[in-house]
Length: 144
Image (cartoon, rainbow, N blue to C red; front, side, top):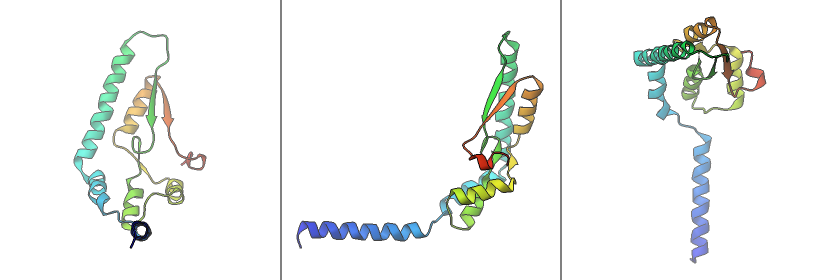
């Protein structure tokens, strides 16, 4: 066998194994992190801590005299909104993210708030701070 034949056989074997792997997605590596995120007390505590620190920083900033209107800019998904049930379902079904299943999840509007997020955003609003929400969701998922 010449070198070209060996190389071509190697390429074909590699392609065959990649195709086989692409057909079945194993999400086992995400089980522990998803379970931890959904059930660990540390997650809630750290979330409340982050939003309490944000509140303290906002208060410090509001003490400074300024003619400029203050604003808070937040990302939506996984900062304000918990979409971990979508990830958990994907794990159980051995699937990965895709825009169709994500769109169905978003349209259900069943995601919950990250602990402390609502309180912080209401606090900012009550202080006259404008809140801007940033998301890469498609327009069809905006209202949800």
